[in-house]
Amino acid sequence: SEQVPLDHALGRVGAELARVRRRGLPGVRRLETVLDRLGPGEGLPRSELERLGDEVRHLAGLPEPVHEHPLPSAHGRTGFVDRAWLEAMLIVEYDGRRWHTRRAEIDRDHQRDLEASALGWHPLRLTWEQLTHDPDSTAELWRSTYERRLALRCIELVETNAKALLLDAHHRAGQAHDVVAHRELDHDARLHG
Image (tube, rainbow, N blue to C red; front, side, top):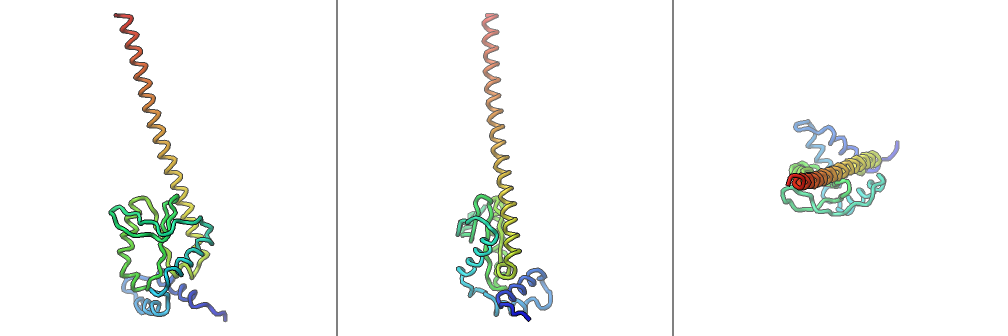
């Protein structure tokens, strides 16, 4: 039988756990404990996780992002996001924390995502398991998300510019109407005056 690297095997188990996890399911906590002991956990250097993420980004064919971009926040929350594509308003956060830590910090992460979303950004969280288990599928989903976001941003910009042009045209039409009306009043005044 073929030997599977430990990273890959743990990634597959972690990906499956993420798919089926729900509160109270027998064995979830035990499996999380095993993943904590064997997986990258907090010991995975940030640079290693970012290297993995950048490899998958390159596989996706995406342009170079802004690294450590300030967190877009509707309520003044401070911090940085791992990667950002300003043109698509897309944020990527790499998550390599231990399973128990992830569960404990999920509310904080959701709050960060909500605040960025309130300003029109699309947060995308990629886990160590996704980056190591199936980088091809992860790259494809990442690429399609980027392309969709970029298309939406283009549409938004066209709509915004079209509205500005229409308002300008309406304003100019109003000015032209005022000039014509003023000339007609002057003409009437000369005729009757």
